[in-house]
Length: 314
Image 1 (tube, rainbow, N blue to C red):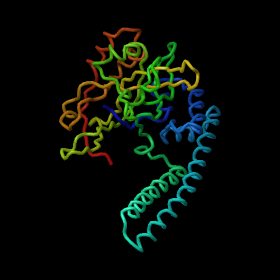
Image 2 (image 1 turned 30 degrees about the horizontal axis):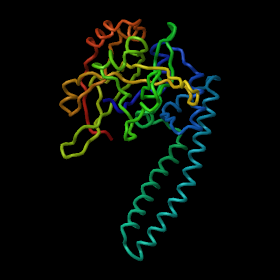
Image 3 (image 1 turned 180 degrees about the horizontal axis):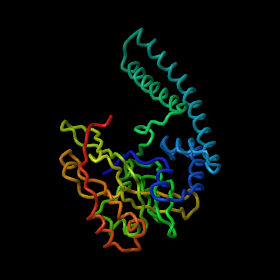
Image 4 (image 1 turned 30 degrees about the vertical axis):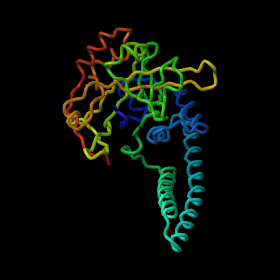
């Protein structure tokens, strides 16, 4: 499973590399929704792309970003004051008598204070840090290249595919965890994903992908995989436009990265899947599949096989 990736968060890269049109209205609607919907997670790198874009059509999005950062700093500073008082109370109790409850309070308050300080610094930060800012996780949004009506378009989509017609509950497991539909296994494309495969394809460009693997001691360790060639990965994706029949939820564009059997070096590192990294000459056909599943499988058979070097994630 590709649970996280370092991606092209800047829409302009897609413009330059693929001659794509940017769906500014979709981006504007996404940024407007973030103010009232905590489920909307946008990587800061995507924010910076609009902050640095002087085009008039980006002005509305820049205002939403400024408002969001200002609100983030204000909320975090208010909560920081509460947690500082909580920490001080715990310290006073510990000075009188060491108890598990007071130790726990000190630990929780200390962790929250550290987190809140990072959020405040991020809200005020004006420098782009790609290794942090361009990383996405399931339920986060990212620019995705698709083809609509013969036109290449960059749209923001959620990394966690909810197929059209499915109940929103598919997003979670019975225990409330994120379901696995942010990835689409190649061996399941003609079954569960049959309404998307060979019909609605997308492309995400990434430089690194991350996986959790068994550490051999009953736990797990996060590894990051990077092509030894240094080239960006053209990640084959499926996407879908979901609408709520009842009209109570907003429409959702979402996508999943397609995974295949692991490359040998990935398997040796302890993981059982690898994203499908397309060759550049297959991009045109991939984005316009015309229902030809056999031709798409042939593209997978001719995918790129760079050696994926790995190391522990920072």
